[in-house]
Length: 204
Image (cartoon, rainbow, N blue to C red; front, side, top):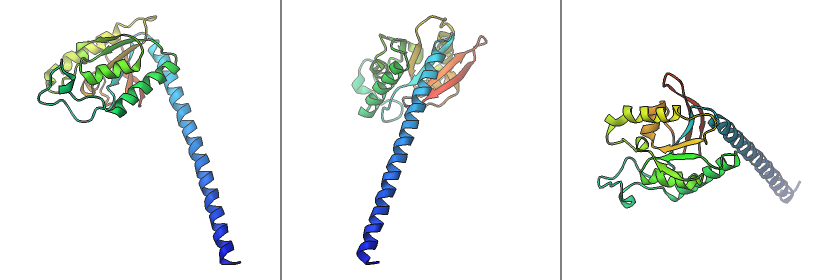
C-alpha cells in the first residue's frame, strides 16, 4: 500500500466515525427532548390535582442576594434576569403550554427578577404574593413565609387552574427542603397535616 492510499483510508475512517458520532448525538438529543416532554406532561397531570402547585425559582440572574442599595420599587437597584434567564423563562412557558398548561394562576415574588420570570411564562395575569418575596437578608421571616406558601397550595381545589408560584431559592428551600437551581420547577403536594411533599422536579 502506498502512503497516499493509507492517508486516504484513514480519512475515510475518521469521516465515518464523525458521522456515527453525529448520529448518536442526534439520537441522544431526541431522547432527551422526549424525556423533557414526558416530564412536562407528567407535571401537568400533577398540577391538576388538589393541593398541588409548581414552585419555580426565578430564571438566571447573575449574583447572590441583592445590592446594598436595593429598592423594591426600582429594578435598576436589583439583580435582574440575564439574557439567558429571559430566554430560559420564555422557553419554560412554551414547554408548559405544549404540555397543555396554557393558562394558570401565576403568583410571584415582587422582586423584579421573579416578576419578569413570571411574565415571560406568558400563562396569564401575574399577581404579587408577598410570602414569595426573598428573605435572604431577613431569615427571621423564613417560617412565616414557608407556612403561608404551603397554606396557599393546600387551598387549591380540584377544578382550579394550575397554580404556579415564582419565588427564590431561600423561600422554596424553606417550604420544601429542596435547593432548586435557577429556573427549576419543584412540584409540591401539601398534605392535610401541612407537610410539603416534592412530587417532581423540572430543570430548565
